Image 1 (tube, one colour):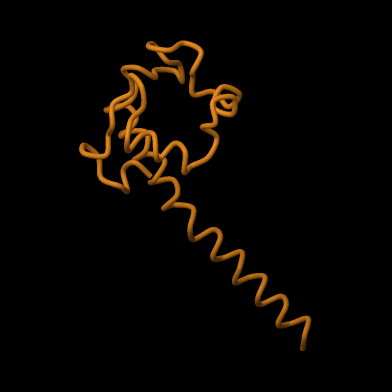
Image 2 (spheres, rainbow, N blue to C red):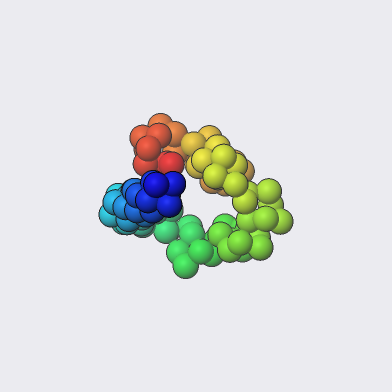
Length: 96
């Protein structure tokens, strides 16, 4: 009986994981639209036309303390240096 319950629970977990994938894909598409419309002028291809050393590449983000969702969300919302604040232009869920 324990083995049967374990199998059922595993199937439920697997099912829940696969059911959540389409919404994740939709979020990626929405994020791409937001980025293209608001960020790509300065950050096309993950680069930075204003401060070339501060790209969106993983190593540069880590070096600049921007390697967490909270740090990126804060900067996009409030701006920093030459980067404008998008908190007044974008909804919180768009920034997220």
